[in-house]
Length: 82
Image (cartoon, rainbow, N blue to C red; front, top):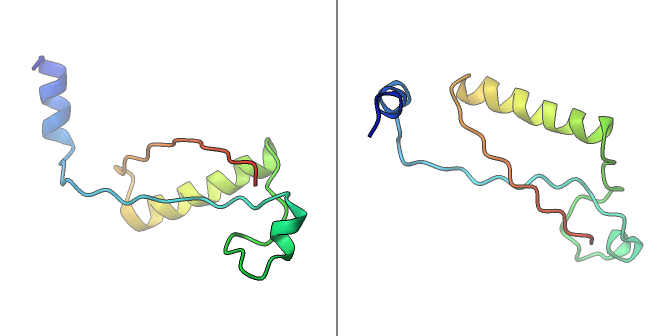
């Protein structure tokens, strides 16, 4: 292990905890929006750009408020066209 990796490891405690989060940004599928058994967000999908950026900003603000500034958040954007 190099000195930098060792230093980072000592600064950030690795607790082994991971909270998986799914952000439901809505759907543009009219059939799903009308389906009584659809469990997703019943609104049109957030558009890429400013609307989506505002959604992620709100999420990150809430994460920082609840878990502090030293939280690690890894994004995996998986867009499924439902």
